[in-house]
Image (cartoon, rainbow, N blue to C red):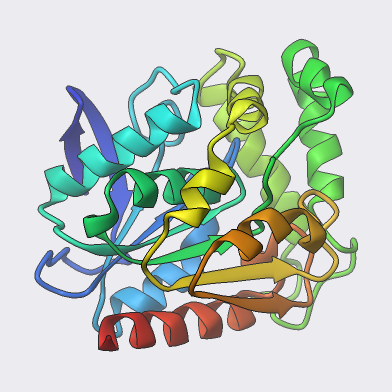
Length: 271
């Protein structure tokens, strides 16, 4: 689905269902150097089980027009504008990694729009090492390789992979390379710098009134579970689910992530 958001074209995947804003809505936001495809399994299931699903490509990512936005705050404002363009009055706001900060800030800025908040692979502060920041600026291909290695718990395929010959790590690497090819304006550095500079996380979390779900990977080296303590401690109505995965938990533990999201959606909209 294509929408006009802040005067530019924005693409949203809807789980291969016609979008119906009257249904209980769920918005899933991807992380740095990614696009909507990282939510493939979860988005399709939720869309075929009674939800209006919006999975946007952020500006400058995937099929959405650029330029990429340079701060979490600007991306949160864009996300709220996207909801307005889609006619969504209230939604569960979910996000992975950088996307989790965007969802958090959006819920803070417009609490009436947040039926729930789902933060996956999150951390605050989400600091990026100077070495990785510089590598993302000077040698994006090397940064992609570094992050891809750190984002997976092992090179071995998990039982939940789609089938023989499917490479979780290889797929993630190709996605990041495709994002670079589509947007050569130092997209990785822009995303990383936005995460590194975001400073409102703890205050935003403290003001969240809706139910919140944290899905954390037990083997996550990019955003270890301990790095989420400022957020989990500040949120008043939060539940923590730990899955056996690294940072790329939607692909390494897709069924466990889906179970947690589906259960949370049912309970959030039941209240």
